[in-house]
Length: 107
Image 1 (cartoon, one colour):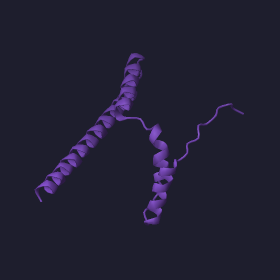
Image 2 (cartoon, helix red, strand yellow):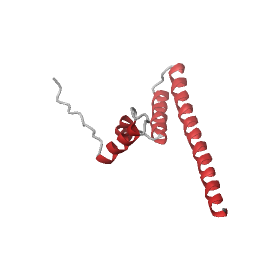
Image 3 (spheres, one colour):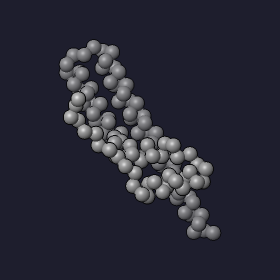
């Protein structure tokens, strides 16, 4: 038996009420509880990229074969692409929010 204790996560009252309201409205809330609980364990893209770049340095210094180095480089590329995609989506969302605010003031 191991002596490792797992940290248990619990939903607070506000989170539980939000999920119950979604269920009452007929919306799916199956993943909402998991998303709320996993929020504190999410790693930012920049932190992930930094870790993978550190791994890339390590792999390069230790003389791993070309295939391993290429795989780690591809992970870096994938993370950067995801970061760019999310940044683009944020810009689009911000643009439309600005447009909606302008329309409210004009009307």
